[in-house]
Length: 282
Length: 116
Ligand SMILES: [Fe+2]
Ligand SMILES: [Fe+2]
Image 1 (tube, rainbow over the protein chains, first blue to last red):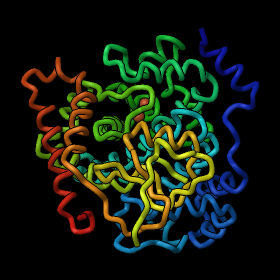
Image 2 (cartoon, chains in turn red, yellow; image 1 turned 45 degrees about the vertical axis):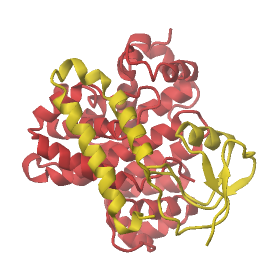
Image 3 (tube, chains in turn brown, orange; image 1 turned 90 degrees about the horizontal axis):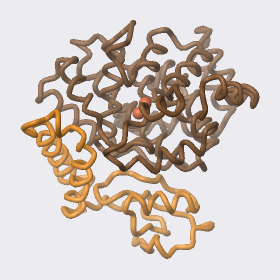
């Protein structure tokens, strides 16, 4: 059985979290330093053509509801915002590089739809919850990033996990991970987030996205991410290793004070806008 | 432009370029064109119920929508919601979700850009 020391020993021996491509790493550094202009940032992004193309595609995604096609990179960066851009830097290269691994394209789709649903929820309930829309979207995008490393380091285990995905008698993915490994993808995701200097509220949310009641910092934000996660699953953007909506959704709805009419409105909008998100990205 | 739809099942995945967005019967985008059909992509699309893909450009093809597909998706949705049953005794929440999703897809159908 794998355990935390074994997992991370073997993981670190193999070089730890894969390094970001050089240009992407530079972009992350500049975002963290908070002193680069959008025009300079666009110049930097342009150095990695395939990333630039994906950024333009993202700016044209249903998340932003732009009336016209965005073709200018500076405008695209302005629309996306720096925080979500950083999350895209941390996710796009990973999911692109390992897209041949069974389960990862579905996880990437799930992550993008969760980002959209969390964003929509933050837009709709901004007044009452006082949650930053960009932070919410960012969190949705990276909430399951720890799973990528399970796919890379514990591939046999993940293959078994995927075999059980359709069985309603089985425990949810994260509980099975804990049972077998004594840690879960939230734990690995938080380590990844720490490496890239994500703020404490976001690390907290990464760690507790399946147990929002335990969050220390911004509980509303964590509940919102948990909501986005479950709504994404509801509308068909499932986890490759667990296909069911968890009963926790009822508690989340209560905790966020959502009346049925609010939930219906959210769900409708999530279905509508998720139609434009592609399962496979090329 | 008229498109040629070919059966995905029988299509040799190596090197075939899909030139039109692949959507499922509810209009959800599965693969953005242009993309090369690889064995993994073929498997994924088949698993999502895609039976045909276009191998000639037809960017303005309207999304197709049919009631049978909607009912199938709603059955899958109910399956995804199965763990809620013991906590949702009257079934109100599940009913509300299913009807909302049904309404959302039906509403999308009447939007001009999605019309056949
Ligand atoms: Fe998760
Ligand atoms: Fe998730």
